[in-house]
Image (tube, rainbow, N blue to C red; front, side, top):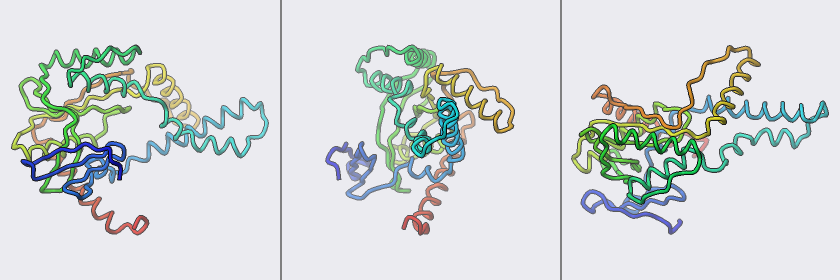
Length: 280
């Protein structure tokens, strides 16, 4: 096991945690534990990703066919088409990654320099505007939380007072705000409440764009072209946003609702681990 780890103590020193960033493993009192995001992974979100991967392969082959001016495609062309989704995922750091890194340094009072890329600057300024408009007072960041009662662990992004209320703020670099984020943040809140006796009053999701505005527009145009080729109608897509905030708790019962859904996932994950003969 790698020696590079972060060590922390919880529950008045009774719980010793080692977190290995490279492998994203958590060990509690010498035993490996399942993280919140791994548990939520039992929810199948693969359908849109499969469509995206297939469209990438088809578009690659179409462009190759056009550039070959009618010559036959080779076996290598088909192989290259099959790995386009992997190459996309391995792309260099995104706009959102840059803004997220800046926010982390800002919260830790490291006086980060303003990013040079225009979209990243827009994201940083939008974050600062949101902080000022909502009277945000940061308390902690990147803190490990663990539930002894339900035996799960994870790392919450930000704990803060927002307009006088104790809130959890989670930052995501993604193309949308997904409902699984509600389960994830509820689990972090409940784990921290279990140890500390605090009571969270709300949760915010900050979504940061993965791509530049031009990349977004190109992707939406290509998506519509693929829909037309498949016989579907064009869809109207939202305006590009580097920075988006969503408050999850307009209803005060939402945290409890989302936590119940998370615990259901945990039960299903345990059942899957015990019964799935493909992996066992």
